[in-house]
Image 1 (cartoon, rainbow, N blue to C red):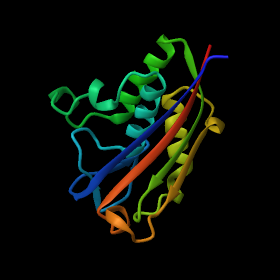
Image 2 (image 1 turned 120 degrees about the vertical axis):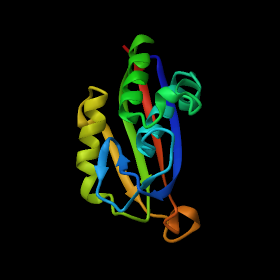
Image 3 (image 1 turned 90 degrees about the vertical axis):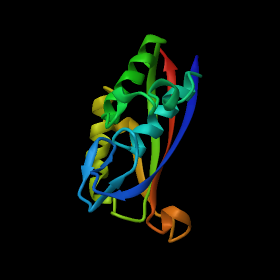
Length: 159
């Protein structure tokens, strides 16, 4: 059986005046994340995990921040484009396991909506998408509320 595993990570600094978008969902907050696109750390981590599983580099190589076409881009659309690459290479996503690391706001109330957003964008059953939320217990830039990060792990299976 041809299977491939990929891991992805992303981190963005917190800034005032931008919407906070995680997994394609706008989270009520007085701040957002700094980035060339919409700075969706979870979508970016999953995108990198998919690209890594295919040995196709990373999100910056495919959607560079030097390209004005990606200014304020919807990261879920970028994730969908990478999903098309997965399909074109003859793979399907078996499952996704991910974690959002943020001191604030609390992510737990939005987890189901985020799971549904990701599974919908990737045309897969929501039972195959895991999203967890953790804090950094006040340690480092994330713990001090200066940044939000995400990790993702994906398993691809040849169709």
